[in-house]
Length: 547
Image 1 (cartoon, rainbow, N blue to C red):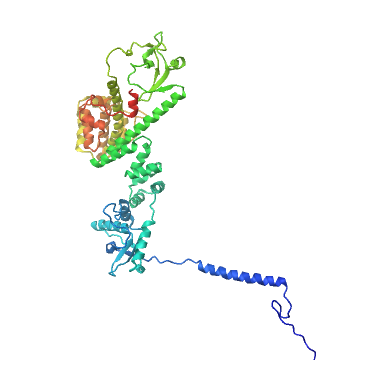
Image 2: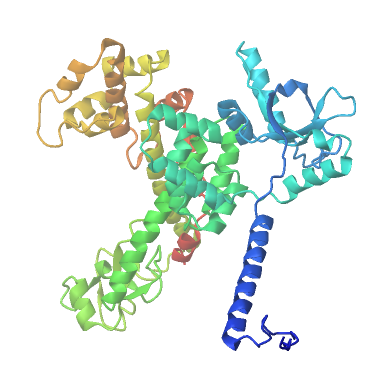
C-alpha cells in the first residue's frame, strides 16, 4: 500500500491547499462590502421614519367652563393689557367662531380645564357667546386640544405657553393690505364679500379700497396705521400723500369728527383742500416747466407792481404807444420774464426793467412811486386773503355738492326740506326766476346722480322720462334737487362769500340741520362776518408771492 502525502492547509488556501486566484478574492470582498452597505442603508431608513408627537385630543368645549391656567405666560397688566381681544379678533370669532384650537390641561381640582394658550381667543368667544345669548341665539363651542400629559407638569405648561407667544410673529401691514387687495379682486357676490369683511374685522368699503391703500410706501402705511386710519381713510391719504402736511391735516380732521360726533364731515373738507393743493401744485409745475422749456425766466409773483423795476406787459406800451405782446417782448427785450399767478397759475408776462429798456407806462396803469402813502403789507394781505377765500369757497362747494347728492337720495324728506322747497317755488324772490331763465339742468342732474339730459340734445321737458319712472314716494327728490340747484347757482356762486346774504345763511343752516359739516369759511359766513374779517394764515407759497 503506497503512502500518501497530506499537505497542510494554510491561511488563504483552498481545500486542496492551493492559493485562490486574486480575481476570486476581489469578487468576494466587493460582495461582502455591498451586503454591509445594504444593512447600513436599511438601518438608516428605519431610523429616519417620522415619529408622532402627541399634541392632545381635539374636543369642542363650552367657553364658560374654561379657566385661565395659572401658568399661562400672558398676564393682565395695569397698563398695556394684551390679554383682551381686539376689535378684529372679536369680529372674526363672531362671524366664524374660533378657528385655531386652544391648548388646555386638567387643573388641580381634577374637574376644570385651564387654558395654556389661546386666552385672547377665549375672551373673544365669551363676548360672542354673551351677544348670542342676549339675542336668544345659540353660541359656538370652542375647539380645544386637551393635554392630559401636562397634568401637574407646571414647567412644561409654562414653556408651552411661552413658545406659543414668543415665537409668534404677526403679519405685517403690507401683508394684510395685499391680501385684502386680492380678496377685493375676486368675483364674489355682495353677501359673501360682506361675510368675509365681518370675519376679518373690516367694513366691505375698506376691502374695496385696499388696492388704493396698497399704493402707500411701507413707511406711509405704518404712519396711517399708527394714526388709527381705517383702510378707506388710508386710501384717501394715498391720493394726497405727496402734499406736505397731509397726514397732520387729516389726523386733525379725524380728531374733530370724533370729538363732534361727525362721521366724515371735517375729513371730507380737509381731503378736498388737499386735493385742491395737489391739483394746484401740478398745474404750477406744468406751467413752470413749459416756461422754462421756452426759455422764459420765472420770477416770484408780487401782489403790487407799482414799486420796483418790474412791470406786467399789460401795464406797458412801446414808444409809439402800442401794446407789447409776450411774443414780441420775448424776441426783442432781455428783460422778458413771467410770474405765475398764485390762484390761476397762469403766467403774467413782465419786463424786469421797463424803464431801462425804454418802455412806456400805459395811461391806465397805476403810476410808479406816485408819492402816496400805501401800506404795501396791508395791500398784499388783502389780496392774499381774497385768493385764499376764493380757494376755500370752491373747495367747500365740492364737499357740499356731495352732501346734497346724498341728501337727495334719502328715503324720505324732512319737514325742513319740504319748507325749503315750497318756500322757493312759491316765493317771489329773484332766485327761482333767475335760475328758471337760465334753463340749466346740469346741477339738478348731478344732485340726482343721473346724466345731464341737456348734454346732448335740448328738450322742453328734460326730466320728463325720469319723472315718469320715479315712484310717488320718491318724487320729492326731484323737487329738492331742483331747489338745491337753483340756490347753488344763484346764491352760492364764486363770489358769494364777499357779501353773504340771508339766503346764503339760511341755506347753509338748513344743510347743517340735515347733517352737513360746515367748513371754516362756511361757518364764518353763517356768523354774518363780512369781507373785512381778518385774513386766514397764508401758505408758504402765498407769503413768498406777497413780497
